[in-house]
Image (cartoon, rainbow, N blue to C red; front, side, top):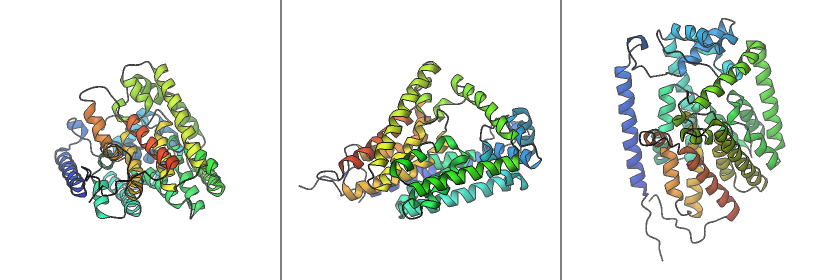
Length: 397
């Protein structure tokens, strides 16, 4: 008997994505129309994180890279670009400081537009390689993570392109894949499980390329920025941890188990314990899944979702990564059949950044770890069990 059509038809999916995109465009236009210098009021938001990139670049070009980790000195540099901007700290490693080194060679607005245009262009190009159809690209453009990353001027597109390219090229161009993983040293807390996966799969060429690339990247950072920059970075990690523990950083924007537990009012020790336990379990699943082989898109999806369980520190703009697991799982579902509730889970993952924000207005609950764990479960089950019995294939029609 033919199964009844699922509620998520192609027409409904596209209509929902178009409505979401229209809302984001309306919001972005409103923000740009009402923005004013921070000194004139609190409404300024466009590029609110990118100003730290520009300020750190300015200090590095002046030969004072280590001062990027001094909040007062960084604020002085930031206010050259945007007078009156609120003080912000820099917690990134020297490798990312080297990556943004050229930015202050341009005026702030030109640097912001150029950085976002290049990284978004690469992200959309890679998205087309993975998705391959206009309906899927509409959903990608309408994703909350895309717009959060754009409005903040963050690096989510850059890291997503590195991780996604590594997964796409791993079997055909392992050296290129390894180089992309090595370049994830710009945000090393997102890359921890990648070497584990490569070792489990016996992908030694990619592993060697990743190690060599990361080593060269670190050495180049020390050579250009100075060894003292690494000492300043290390000293700043304690302050970052303290701000996470006290909730000084917005926990509702942090898709980690630690943030989920702390947002419920639990003490930091318990939150760290829960986070460590989750990281160990997820790390074991990464090892088993990559050791047992299976379709690379599913292993890649599991790995990219698992990466959010490593560090307590992370933000909603990093969820740009989820575009590729969502696409890979959806493609596998349309080819081999769906598990119960799987399509609803993918919709939740697509909505996750905005949904988490809206949920905090009702209760201090961080939904991200549950959704990410659900996606890992789906990937693991598909890898372990193979095709779904009696598949329902007539979806998205």
